[in-house]
Length: 73
Image (cartoon, rainbow, N blue to C red; front, side, top):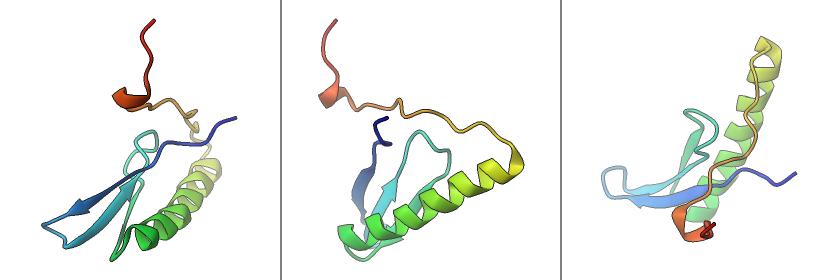
């Protein structure tokens, strides 16, 4: 199984980096550097998945693929 796609971008408003996983609603994290944002996102992902399991909620499969990675049919 492939893993979830992760976006990392700089936020002028927050003056730091935001990392998120589009397939997991509201799963995001902040860091002063891209590496910090990614490390925090890994913690957020683990917490998100654990909470979903405990609540008996479905865990979505990895589906999000940015347009730059999509191929024409």
